[in-house]
Image (cartoon, rainbow, N blue to C red; front, side, top):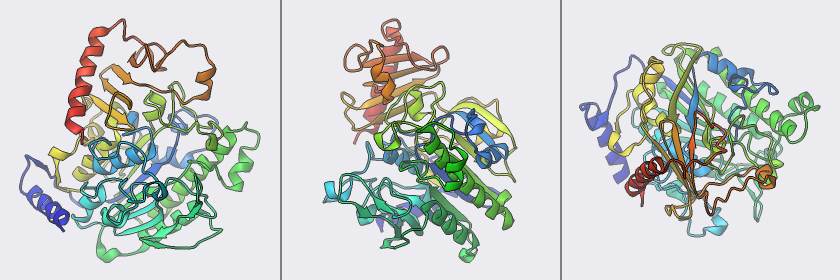
Length: 466
């Protein structure tokens, strides 16, 4: 109740003030579709340079709006990245240093995003939107941390980090558990393909009148996260490709095809031009054993999922709103997943407390390609609030400093690089314009830059620590 009153007050005050709260008048509230891919590699779309994949629908989406080339996820792993996206904050500020533990290992259900956090769904719901989540939650299992308690009128999907797409069972340390819910009620759709179920659910939401309300759909697709289960059509298409690329590629194209189905649905309803569509990956591709130790492509970037090297956090990101945004645009400014919260707020004339949001609205950049990057610096930390053990990074301009770095690429372990991430390379300084592959540690050569970035990191950490 207190949370609802605070949120309502924020919206009410936001309509009157332009200082502490942000409020923008628009002609018409757009529908909002926020699509989050799961474990999609940094360049694994044709519009980002992939030449061995088929992604015509995401390429179509990019052509209809703006594609970002220096876009960063809030974290290199699932739960923290989702918390950052939904709250407009860094994952530490949102109370999510690491992945949510399964209930069997957290019987008191302490893990998860605190219910005090205000999500995009809560912001939009307070502004008259019908709010729905279809797909993967992975932000908590306690009743006050499940989707319906975090602003979503409707939820269809799985609560945990991954499922088999046919049995809808979560497979991990055991016991194996069925994980498919409509709101908080378990549902049985055994044998039905989950990507198709997601498209079906989204289509039903689009068809529903919702009492004349605009909709916000957060489509947290569980694809191409393992298990790699692309359709027979796409497995056949990539049959000549080597493992694990072919298994991964089939799943990426399966996702792309289903995104096309939803775009076609919006077009058939005559509302594609009135719908604000955002697409992003939650972080880089996986090198985990269950992902065949790879499959995704980081392109020129180093690392992947779990790593704060560029391949773990630099992700594809696209925004399309045909009635309002120019087509076939590219933006090279640095941006972050936490920027979607204030961007959506501005484009839907929703009020929010700017003092509690770290993200910056991207609308000025979207409108004008010459607008400067909104962030003078960006910060990451994952695993815990203790930066002596947790991986962290800070980027300012051309420089990036990593603390306690990791490289999950199995090939890295076989190279004779001489790197020692627990010793001499625990602080790893990179000049991105001349070393986008982050192979050379300049910390010893540029101690003054290290000191500057260390100071920025500490000030930020002091601000967001809980």
